[in-house]
Length: 121
Image (cartoon, rainbow, N blue to C red; front, side, top):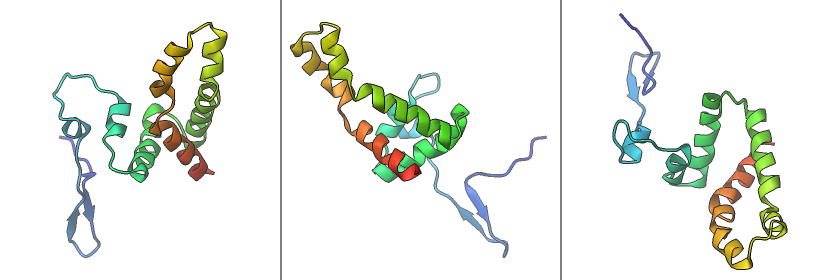
């Protein structure tokens, strides 16, 4: 027999039970069992920047990252990707191709990562 605490319930001292709204990632992505999805896809469905920040903060332990290690990893990615155009030009990539690659580097998620970093101190 397995006994566990429900993560979607709050048990009050007076005996009342409050249901905490919950939606699985599979439901949120309108996905099916066995379908591969990425953490980024889940983040893209977040309604607000605050929701994304909360999602990343909660997910960091799943990747065995304490908040300090997560912030360090994000900081390193931001530092390296901030100079992507320079690296691309140095590698001989044509300007038209660099322009085509811009959405992969210059997007809202990068701004959100910077915002998350500033909120972590």
